[in-house]
Image 1: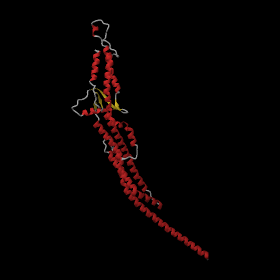
Image 2: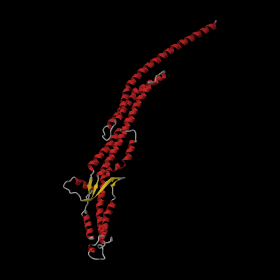
Image 3: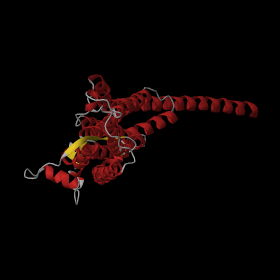
Image 4: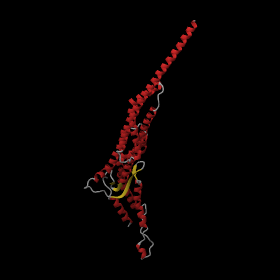
Length: 350
């Protein structure tokens, strides 16, 4: 009975022995061929992400467990009571014992081990399907470094997001949800979803950084630049030197800073429009208020410059009038002094 049971167990594994074993890539191609029969399988293995893409179970342990069934089988059969003990006295209460070092046992273990190792060797290659996606395992560190590198470039952000979008598309189009290898059914769908999640999380991180950059940093900068300009324009020139200084600042705003602030605002709008392109991220209404404020502030620039120009013209006239008055007063005082000097001279000559 033991010999037959062991032989049946070995015969079961012989069904999975082949001269050549199909590679994972060949198995994937067969999935698209309706005329090619599926491989026989009886054990499910699962691929997962750890520090690398690997099997959830240790394959050597899987092999050892399947081989150990031979010994367990022998042990169970050795403890089956003999049927004739119910009708006659006998010294043998159980079937004939087979020892673990019996040649039948050793040969069965050796053959099963060999078949398993041949199948596991090709099954192990399933991880190679994911070689091009290995970079995702360390993306957390790389994307953090990317997001902390300034100045930001809109096209670089767009390129990063496209890379993840393309990767998601390739995972969904090219990776199998399962692989029916000889003997082993390799479950891949969970790993596929994990890799897709890494990509989507990375897109989320980039969009969150864009959100903060657009609505907190860029909008705030535009608002503060316009407010600072208006604050400077509120100062009044009371001397010719400060007037020249203020006129120089006004010319700088007219020729340079006005265009710079406006350019920053339009750059802000381009970033915001790009953010709306990605369904993975939702822009909250409250965030947009800072951009609305930046729009209102930017629209104040032209009128503020025009008003400052008028004010400086008036201040120039006031300063010039004051200077003319001061000069006239000085001349009158000087003439008075001259008159006193002349009187002094005449008096001394007498």
